[in-house]
Structures are given as C-alpha cells and as structure tokens.
Image (cartoon, rainbow, N blue to C red; front, side, top):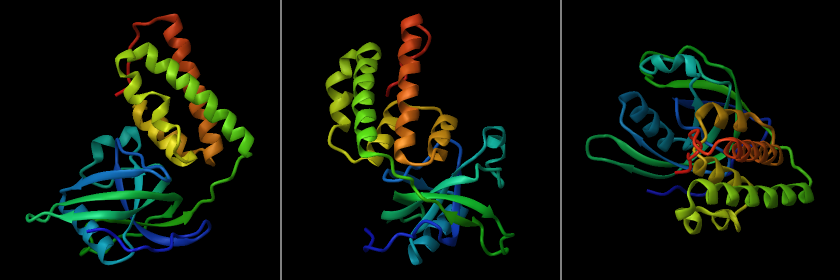
Length: 230
C-alpha cells in the first residue's frame, strides 16, 4: 500500500505527532527507513497514522534509559519526522512500513495520553534546514568522497567496487549524508549528534571530521577495531 502525494509540514509549524522511540534507529531528512511494527502500542500507532496524516516522529532514546524501553524512556528532544510511503499489514496485525524522512523537529512537550491511546504523542516544532554555499558543499562532498574511498580501501578492500565513493556519486546532498551514516555504521549517539547539527552543509563538515579521525586512527594502529563498514 503506497501513499498519495501530500504536502510536507513547513519549518516553524507546530503540530502533534505520534512519536516512536527507538534506541538504535536515527532517521535523517531524505532517508528511507524500513520498520517492522509488532508491539501492540506501535501497531495502534501505525494504524492511526495510516488513517490520518501518515506522519510519525522518530526519536532516539537516551543511552542511559535504554533499559526503560518497555515503558516511556527519556528521549533526545530533536527528532526527524517521517511519512509512511509504503505499508503492509500482516494477517496477525503486525505492519511492515517504510518511512521517508521529511524534516527535523524539536519536542516542545508531551501531554499525558488518554487511557485508550497506547502510544506516545508529542507537541513538536518543525525546524529549518539552513543552506550552505554551493561551492562549500561541493568541496566537502569531494573531500568526503576521497576520504571515504581511502577508508574503504583500508578496512574493506574486497568491497571497494560495492560500497566505494561511486555509491554516493549521483545522489542529492541529504541522501549523500544518510547513505554514509548507514554505511559507516556510526553509533546511535554519533548519528543523533549529526541529526542535531543544523543543515546538510554542517553535517557534511561533521562527516568530514569523522572520516579524518577514523583515517588518523588507522594510521596509528590498524588493529583497533576500525573495520566497522558493513
């Protein structure tokens, strides 16, 4: 079941969103994220979203509260709104869905939910994505592609043709960031930090620093667990 075209909320909009707290998944604007929905509260959330705006707010659980996943764990205030672009309801009530990241938001408050609603809902403010100079973005992309190629050659030479710089050569800037975040298998806290960085240009700058740090580490010691490309 695919979704009809709908206008996305604009920066500065205030709206109520169902929020889906996860400890390992960080959605980025422009990225697509497949999810398997099995818990009763999130089945209810998926059904309600499909019957309404098809919007879900993805938020990351703070690391110190991962043990509280069965309840309402504390989350980072910056999340990413996603629209359900594909959905399949299974015979037992589970869902397979695909979210497309639309834009970031800040949680402003989370009202107490009524007893009949099992999932969390928050009031959020949608955030702007500051634009960087095109020449700066192009230079960063070129630098990152070079660094990425060197990193793959160092840690996974057998996969250079599969996940080398060509993988992100012809994609837009937002997809460029999200693909690299996935391929580099960054820890959730680092991904969250990238999400909180204002604008794609600034995120490219952070990715550039991460790659340079990883390459510097490889130069110091080839055997300290840097083979994290997957």
